[in-house]
Image 1: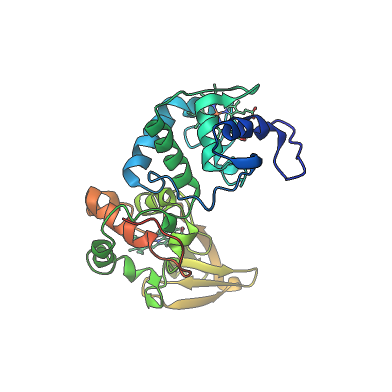
Image 2: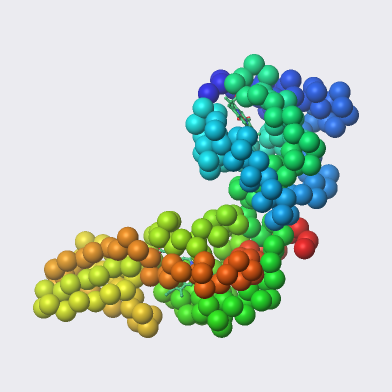
Length: 280
Ligand code: HEC
Ligand code: HEC
């Protein structure tokens, strides 16, 4: 990585060239980077643009930045994009013109294509609640509580089951991509304290459930009814933590394409604090 020296207003040297290009174009006054007052580009948070941007990323960027943007020949973009310095206008310039003197070639996309790409990159790093729902949240709510029965295991605002993590604030905690992965492939990212375990007691009895809290002396096992069993470790012969989540792994088929979008829309609206949300 390049050594970053900071100017007195906290902007690293490597962006100065880009900032001066922007200044020339009148997009940034006096090298100020703050674009917070400006309205976001309409593509940001738009699921259709994000999808198109994803394809462009796969075609033009993944070779150097990795299929998931986690880095390769080029830096880890997921980390870099959290930097306040990399505002949307700067990102636009980096994509179109490359990094002067670095190993990053300019992509020279059409304006729309570049903004689709930015919409994709932002969606990968921002909480789902900041994007548009991208589905029918009302239909998703019905599915969550009735048809797909997610609420049997998950609670939202005090209502629902306790086998899986509480989802009251999940839209603020996860990106849309993380929510999609969580629903489609529950085995991919196990959540601490919610992994399924099989416990064989010394008396031969076998118990299955979610291993909640565990220390050297005891284990809390929550069974399918939500009942907590506190087991003394000296009565336990064997504990096996399963690689497979208790959460069903066939929701992709069960929900269908639209059903999935609707459930994601509902999840993405779950946030404790009201936030600035892109409209439908
Ligand atoms: C040939 C390899 C290559 C390709 C293709 C490429 N990049 Fe890069 N990219 C790099 C390298 C190397 C850097 C680091 C440059 C530096 O810091 O001097 C970089 C830097 C960046 C940065 C700046 C990160 C920072 O730390 O400030 C962004 C943003 C970026 N790339 C996005 C993209 C996007 C989006 C695409 C697809 C259009 C893309 N890159 C395609 C190699 C590449
Ligand atoms: C049988 C219980 C069960 C059902 C039904 C279930 N889940 Fe889960 N869910 C879990 C468990 C357990 C986890 C924790 C993942 C792990 O480590 O196994 C989880 C994880 C998640 C996460 C990730 C939470 C986080 O903190 O990242 C999301 C999102 C989620 N579930 C949504 C859903 C949705 C939406 C449905 C219905 C379509 C659903 N779940 C149905 C048990 C369930």
